[in-house]
Image (tube, rainbow, N blue to C red; front, side):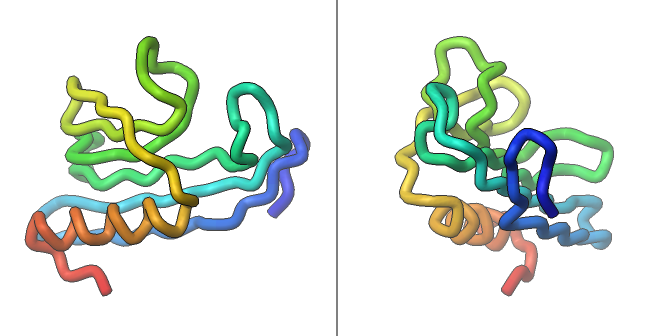
Length: 106
């Protein structure tokens, strides 16, 4: 799917884990290179509770003052910088963290 801003969606994955009331939602877009998105990708990869509480989330959205372009949210308060090696690498990392929380996600 192409967006009007020149973005093309390259990842769109949703997985629910109803036995624990959690879900994973992963989206990534190829975007034109810019100061904010110098790698040409915009993404959000989240594992959290169905009620909206974040357990862990990777993103590169510009609305986190003081955070690096690529960062990880742990819970609702903590934000840590992460090394970006592409969306596939972060997707694998998120899947491993979901498994660490006891979910079966191949």
